[in-house]
Image 1 (tube, rainbow, N blue to C red):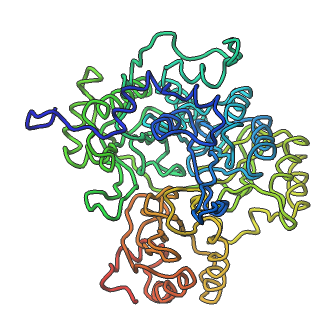
Image 2 (cartoon, one colour; image 1 turned 120 degrees about the vertical axis):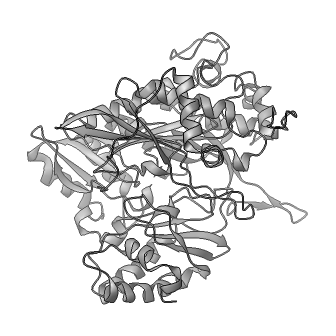
Length: 565
C-alpha cells in the first residue's frame, strides 16, 4: 500500500517475478526451442541465474527488406565472493571463453568474471561447467544480493581473512534458495538426475519472499586504511574496526549506489550513509535485516527509483536504522569514529606475512585476450600450470597471484614478459588507476565507447602528465559508455560518462579514496578532446595545489566556478 492507503501500482517486472514460480518462468521450455533468444519475461528471470541476453550491434545482419536483424548472444557472470578462486577455476573460464565464448574474458569491477558471446544453444553447458568447478552464477545478477566484495589481499594479518570469510558467508546466506537454478542448469534435462546438489526442496524464500527485492542489491567489505572495494558506493557496506591489531566489528553503511537515468531528475548517484556499529557476531544477521527492510519498504512501482539509496535518501538514515533494529530484534550501537582514509590497489610485489609473496598484475580494463602483440590468456595459462598460484580478483579489474614462493618470483615475471605483457611496475600511475566498463558493442545500455577507447585516451594522458611533470601523481580515471556508472565514475578523481555518440560528460572532484562525489566540469566533450579539456585543470593544479594535495581534493576545494575552463 502507498502512504495514502491506495493500492501501489507495481512495475511490470514485479508481476513477472510474482508469476515466475520462484524464477522458473518458461526458461526450461525456451531452452529446448531452436530460437536464438528468449521472450521478454524470461529475460528478467535469467538475470537471477547470472546471465543477460545481449545484442552485438556490430554483428547484426541486414534482412532482405533492409532491416537490421539483432545478433543475440549472452553474457554469463560468475559470482566469486571476495574474488577468491583457484588456478583451475580460472583455467575453466578461459576454456569456456575459447570454446563457446567470444574468446575474451572480463574481470569485472565487482571481483567477478564475465564471459561474452555465449549462444543460447550453449548457455546451459556454460553455466553447468562453471558449477562443475565449484563456482556459481546464481545471484551474480538480478534483484537479489549480488557478489559480495572484500579486500582480496592475502595478508596473513588475522584481519583480512575474517573480512574474506564474511564476504563468503554473506554471499551464501543471502543467496536465493529456490530449486529453479539447479533444475534448469545442473540436473540432467532428460533424466532429472542432479550432478550437483543445492537449493531448497521447499518452494519458499525465507529472506526474499515470492517477489525478491525491488532491484539489485550490492554489498562490500573494506578497512578504514584500505578501501579497495569502494565501500561507500554499495547498498550495504561494512568497514572493519580494528583495535590493537584485532578486528572487533564493523561500522555498517547503507544506501550507496551510482546508477543514473539522465532524463529522470529523480535519479542521482549517492554515497552510503553511516548507520551503526555491529560486532562480528552480529554482522550477518544485521545484513539480513537490511535486506528485509529494502524488501518490504523499497519502491516497487518505479524501477528507476527502486534501489535502496532512494529509500535511505527519502526516509533518512535514522528511520532506516530503526526499521533495521526492529527486524534484527534489538538496538544497535552507534558507529565508531573509524572511517576510510586510504586505498591500496595491491598492484606489484608484496609479502603475505607467511614467508610467501603475492603479485598484483594490472589488467587494463579487465579484458583478457590474445593477439599478435599481447597474449593475456596464454600468460595466465602459463602461470596457472607452471606455478599454480591462488587467484584473487580485485575491484579494479586486476588479478593477484598469491602464495608465490621466493624462488618463483623471477619465473612469474618471465612468464608475463614472454607473452608481450608489461609488468605492473612498468605501467604509469594514470593507467594503473584507470578502468572502464564493457560498453559497445554488447551492452544494451551503452550510448558510446568505453573499454575499447580508454587505452588510447590514457596514451594521451601519459604524454600530457609527463610534459607537466605530474606523471607520479595518484588519481583515479574511470570511463563508462552510459550514465549507469558500472565503472564507478561518479566518485573518482576524473570520470568520463557517455552522454551522446562519441561525446562524454566530464566529472572531476571525487577522490581516490571513494568518499566524495564528483561534479560536472564539462558536458558533451568529444572523445578526441577529453584530455585537451582537462589540461588547463592539470596546469592550475600544479601551480595552485596546497602541499601534497591530491588532484580530486584540489578540484573539490577550488570548486567549479573557480576552475579554469
